[in-house]
Length: 379
Image (tube, rainbow, N blue to C red):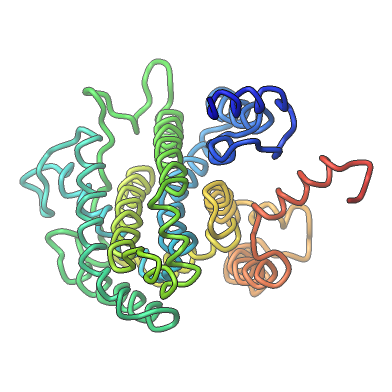
């Protein structure tokens, strides 16, 4: 009877955003009609206009950004939701990329290959191997916290970089590399043009579908008992332990899930790019993923996606600046060249967001939305 009355009350107040009449309504994934309409509109726009209205160059960038967004969501789970600072994301991306490349690689070549090109197999294997590596590393998180944990995870990047440079039968060696994972589904190569769609259109649609699946899973995870345990560990691990939350178990789980996401993202990212080189899994790659989380908004799924797209698009957008601002050089070696400006913007954006809007792009979106909800009043 209580549930029936609660359902009836929520129907009577339907159309009143953020006025919840039950706990279940508050926890619902899309708990207001505007959110439902906005998400449907964005998915329709991304699935219909973008792949057929934009040139292939931009679709390639979007596909790269969507694949990176999966990795950013993974980092946000362990850092934004569980509060465990990790600078070793590039290490788990590399494990996923090389697992998928080795599985889908052609046998009998100079690098390891097993010829398994079916995409679900190598994608799942990449996530699982990276997830197992994350679980192995996770016990460190139970003994360390804050800056000490960040330094230890940073060490993984340098350790991995050395291993990947020396293991030439797997990686191809520095400056040479190897072919990325082969994206094949039911006998069709998704990175090659066909009668209906180009290779970039196929890869864009593939990464879009996978991002939606990973984002929905992550959103459901953080709404569940596990997500509430992550928040308790993040806010005060001693208090969480006192009330019965197993801190060790949930820290290990957070690292395992985050690494699974990173492994899948690494496999997809280098399937889009087409080539894997060991030098690319360096500290800068880890910093870029941290920047995606900070600029997009820590502790939000949609913020991770916004941050990943922003960071991926930034170098391309800065290339357009010399046509608008003549004092900016198009020479990549110039101090105020377009390439250097992208790096400057990374650091500048992180500083500005941490000072003025710690919730990142997601926080700006919330401010804009609240302004128009209250308009024409300012309160």
